[in-house]
Image (cartoon, rainbow, N blue to C red; front, side, top):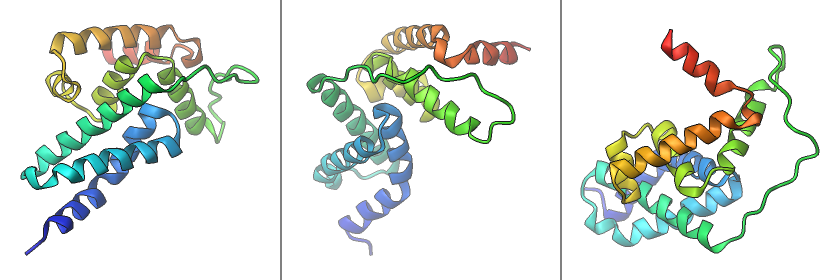
Length: 174
């Protein structure tokens, strides 16, 4: 029979990669993402004996990750990071296009207010529904919709994305 620490270890092994990617999307920095995930998992471990279902553990951990991220953002100053030049538009034959696109999206996400960024990450990366996102953030579905709409407006207006979202909207409609 599996002990409590074995169950937690299995959970961490199964979910750490996804949590780390979510942390990276929230923070925009791998080292901070690792710190964020470690801090969130430490919080979850203290409550692990109360978590009996796997889906509850996933939701609880995601909520701990999000609240930890939001509290970190309140405490630290995060100014703009100057760049030598603006990002270039994607060139089809560019072998680094995927990496450049990820970085461009990361920069665009970093310019969003923290709650808008959290909604975008939870909705698109974690593939949560609006009610699930609202539950994870501890707010109403209306608040999620409002943050979502504002975030998408800001991302569509971002010059760094070069109209990428407009192209996606056009493809989705046809």
